[in-house]
Length: 195
Ligand code: PCA
Image 1: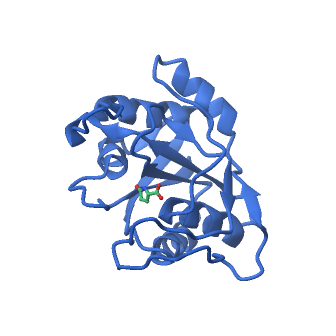
Image 2: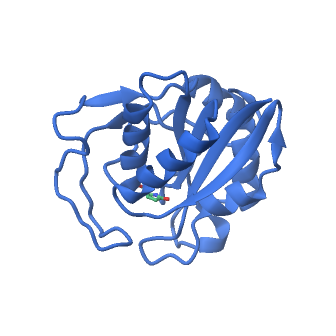
Image 3: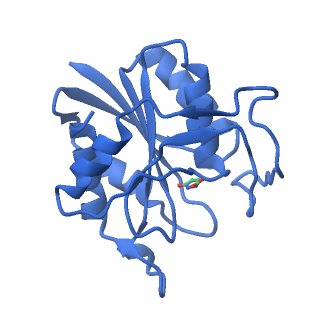
């Protein structure tokens, strides 16, 4: 069996839940030929990647798939790229609010995800769930995680990627798109099937 480490995030920005972690929790322990290990990460610059890297070093997974909330997006969006930039419009859960800082001083400008991003989006769409490749994971903690993992494991065979998910219906945002947790969970299963 192959090993897949999947991460979600704790709540942030005044929310009480984060659909990324709630959906990850609903996943079965085996999907296709993957055994699934689930990990909840803090919404803190630097700490999220540190924790993920520590667990990945121990587990040595074939794949690391990270999930995060992108409030306002209407579709499930696999991310194509992580960039070497931290810029926060709201503080993280430790009060850090970086402004145009590099994640790794003098590091590569960007890395492409090493997962089959387009195939993942197509497979999610084939289940009747809105999905679209995204070309920006932002400059907040999700991008911090994606860029740092791609940098740290760049000389390895590990496949690494990130998927942003919409608000869940439970979060009840007026005039904002949302998706049921069940649908988000099905989207993650479809994503894993495509790897
Ligand atoms: N979304 C944030 C960080 C945690 C999360 O779920 C982001 O898009 O950066």
